[in-house]
Amino acid sequence: TEQRLRDYVRAHVPEQEALLERAVDINSGTLNLAGVRAVGHLFAGEFASIGMDTTWVTLPDAVGRAGHLYAEQKGHRGKRILLIGHLDTVFEGEGQKFVRLDTLAAGAGSSDMKGGDVVILYALKALKSVGALDDAQIIVALTGDEEDAGPLFKESRKSLIDAARRR
Picture 1 (cartoon, helix red, strand yellow):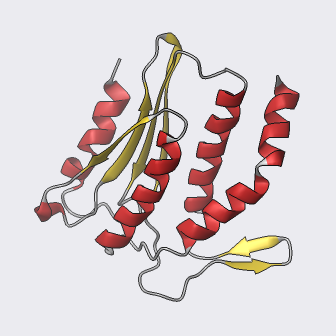
Picture 2 (cartoon, one colour):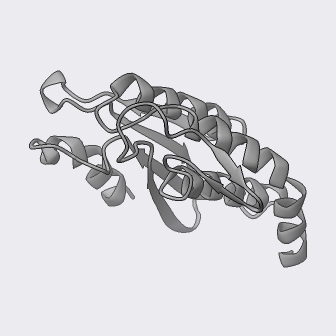
């Protein structure tokens, strides 16, 4: 099983890199609400492609943040798993595009956190490919305001706390 997981991840490296480039090239500084939502839309389609139910949590206008993406698979086997990442970047404005530097890549969010979001997604895809997700309960929470939750953080974090408490 471990070798099949490894082989899946290796076989899909070009897809992972392409998704990372598309995500990084979306300007999604915390205060760019449309950009954060666009990254969420990109990842929502990817999680839906493996059978996860996706939900966009809209925040009240007073919060001044884009909202959050949740992807969930409901099941009964094993422990409930909550994976947390974020869609926004600390960088505001244009100019933080994806670039390749020999065997490395750089750009806004390439490692924190868009790269991590790609890792979460492809880890789940690999696990699904070997049947390891069958009947598992998994929630992926990708927040839209990790870099700056703003003054109304209790409102912003409510859905995350609720997901952690869900049984």
